Length: 220
Image (cartoon, rainbow, N blue to C red; front, side):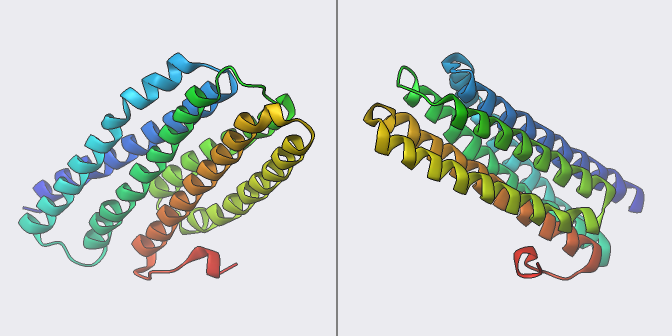
């Protein structure tokens, strides 16, 4: 029975890691599509969004099945619960990547601001790195790496605030940038929301290690 449980848990664990990698890739692709004005890539992200949703459903179903069949306790139960909870945060992060793809299509053909797009590209890379860090923290079961995610979240908030100020300044001097500037603000906000969800994943990793449910933003 224990061998079967371990095999099921390994399968669940690997599925969660694979979903994290998929979300990381989609976040990067969505930002690249926005910066490169690539409507075709953006549409592909929108069309394939169901793949992330399907992974979430499969992992949730697998988690409930494991709990029902094996009734795990202590650290085993915490691992299943961590995946059950964190997978929802990954799916929501994927939703915001899809939002960025929609913004790519909406802003096409409007006056754009290269300097702000450079900042968005940097912000996007930092967000993608944060997804990777969160997944690696889960793989390593690294409590300290999980807690460090909140620092990246703070950096992304600073990026968002700078982009918003720059966008409003551009609107004040050139009304033609209005559509692009509002989309810049939306994309920056989506990237921060992705970071929020990855911070939640970090909190579940801490729970996995300690059994304690915490709020990382309150511990700064």
